[in-house]
Image (cartoon, rainbow, N blue to C red):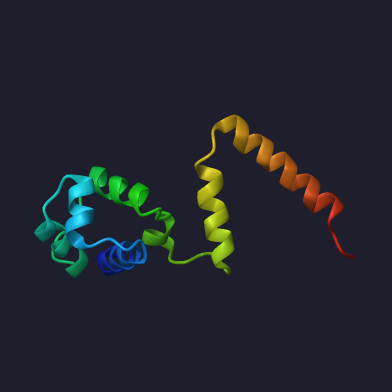
Amino acid sequence: MERKIWAIIRDKRTAHGLSQEELAEKIGKTPSFVGQIERGVSLPSLETLSQITRLLTIDANLFFHGDCYKHQESQEFYLMINQLSPDMRKLAFEIIKQIRKFGRID
């Protein structure tokens, strides 16, 4: 599991165009600590891991279950929905149910 964590963090950091120094500054850690995480030498605390997942928009399920999405759009959709308020999430769910109900191709 540690290997997954460091690989996912490194890949997402680079995808966001951040250096180790920039990520470290944003989470209040040293660049060397970020390097240790990315090399699998150190594991972040839950608080630090939570900061990193929010900052890099990582679905924490990836750490435990791997990429459970068939399409990139599914992951992006999941992340967007989770950023909505509970009321907006409920409204989005109702809209999706209607699209599914009336948009079926039989």
